[in-house]
Image (cartoon, rainbow over all chains, first blue to last red):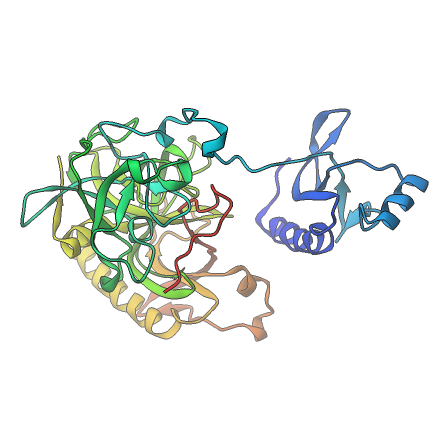
Length: 327
Length: 101
């Protein structure tokens, strides 16, 4: 069963009503839209609003007592904004790694401490409670030293950033800490309306030109509409896209401040491949022309409905930061 | 790139700049670029100017939302839905990314 674009607009409006009405119910942990559950199995041709309850309370005296007690706000309706409602049981918790829980090697290889480092793995600055992607190695045009290239909002993310700020691999959201410092912030390109930055390696680990799961990068190119591209990122691994827009100017919020970002390309999923091109965690990935393995863009943003990735032309980034792609 | 392509792209950039000057600061606009119309099928390669708008523009009545031109310098303009977010994962530790200035 599929939903057309206009119907998704109605779904989202209904979801807002459902969330407003029920997300603060003490017995509700999640409100989403998906397949109905019946007898422990998912019914794949019945889409509905799902209000996940911690405890299923039967209608009648038990529900009245729970309402009076404050365990729940009351009966969840059978429909919201014209959509059927299901009430699956579900209790959820955060999947944080913490010192007291003992060290466990992350299951996701891109989330691990990696040596040598490579494009496509987890990275962050010391103050980001999350992670982005290490794009790949670049070479400082003046010194010839290798550096890490990623987004400004991954390597800095604060307007008061200073050169020397630590960069962790893996990123802080994947458990990285002070002992995982691999580089220090050097300079960014936001003043040129490009969400990009480079960091100097500390020398504690090496960095190779071989994105995780891909062939080595062979040079730099320019994206054109219709170009088939590929990327390796912490969020969605290897994805395949097709460039459908170029020469873009976007406005994005950075810490509540809207900034223009120029040289933006739009990438959509390639027919016949995975239906996703990007998600959170992919910021900083290199988009490569699949035919030539030339880096054409630096991923920085995306959208889910419709599914699209946004990247910035690579050559202007290299020129603004005074670096070259390492090949 | 052929001369025809080169001339087209020069016009397209100029037209895009006009649209950016007029509309990029509007709260309903997220991106302005040049590319394929969103519903275009494989094999058709017409490049148009594209204004990506937020969902509230799509839901608003025509007389309650900003109007965009149909074309600039002979290049068609299409409006398409585009809601975008930065792609870090700042929710891994259950805390919001502090990016305040």
